[in-house]
Image (cartoon, rainbow, N blue to C red; front, side, top):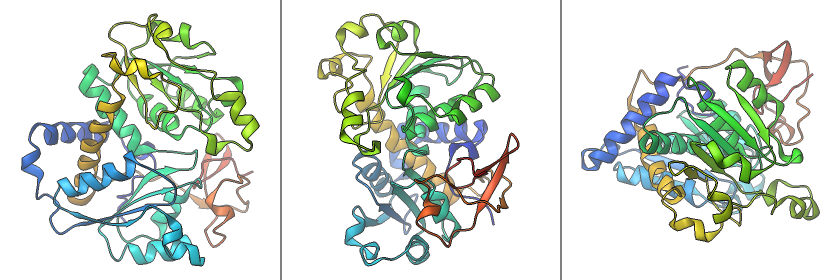
Length: 355
């Protein structure tokens, strides 16, 4: 079956990313030309955890294309509250819709959903794993504001361990020539090893920093993220991390005048409100760019027969995934799909080592 599911930006080539950015810019320039592009089409938004921007951005994108939306933003208002498994939910809803956008707190859920869907599935965030459409938002913003996606020095700051937006962004931008990264976090919240592996595989220069004030001095872009309370095992652990990195005017005074500040939002206290009026602060404009990026994605998945995403080779493993946050732990009917990486068996759902 042709792969039209966007689970991970790793499945998109640089050429495809560039094609999507170009399409988004065309929509921005002539939105009236696309008002009926999806007449008669239905988008299902299945949001198992809270969201404002991603859910509304997708809904608005489909409406602006002439389509309609169905779905839920609270699983307790659906048959999930009665114990329905993911497979049954997806099998039914894919019969009602033309495309599905899903967010879930459990890692690997979007991949699992794609196995049982008759229509394209878009990953809108699966736990602390991935968030590819936020990355498309970031990439459209970068391309429009900096004029390029290569030879950039990119700082990412905050919860780099659980920050799915960070993981997706690094994976995507590491494909472009000349990009380098500054990874700003506490030791407890540093990026997972598999992200470092990707940087090294793509020959990207990177450095690790624990000082935001020092790190901002030579960046093209600073990508701030919140410390995510919902990803911590205890309130004590969260409180120990939440105020370590805060961008304020004093720290920003060290940055270049042409640096841009992005944030996937919501913001808690990691960027002070006084920064909002600085011309380098683009996080609200970034959310608008995201809607156009999602309009472009919907069009490409539904209408462009050549827009086919890559699939990695998988096999059935003898091992169980040991990641307690993986969807395979709760949906036990799922196949033990794995792939090989550096001689190791990796879970095809959550990308964690299985053996």
